[in-house]
Image (cartoon, rainbow, N blue to C red; front, side, top):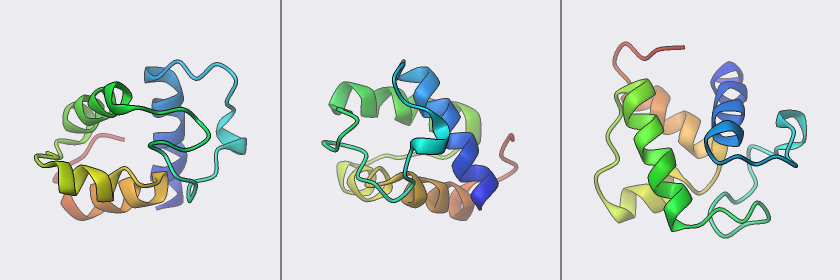
Length: 88
């Protein structure tokens, strides 16, 4: 799971253009949306598209999205539980 977490850190930093964030300083248990990174609803849409495209995992409701995007650790766990033949 730690490999998936590290992979997600890099992908999120890249797609959201978080220039001042290094993966090693990105706490996987820190709150993603509304937290210190400044991730908002538009950013969540970009993350949803990335998760669907890269891992084939659909996040089809706001309730699921709120739970899944609460932290990188929860996102990684959701992908591990729901991905079928995910790309690494």
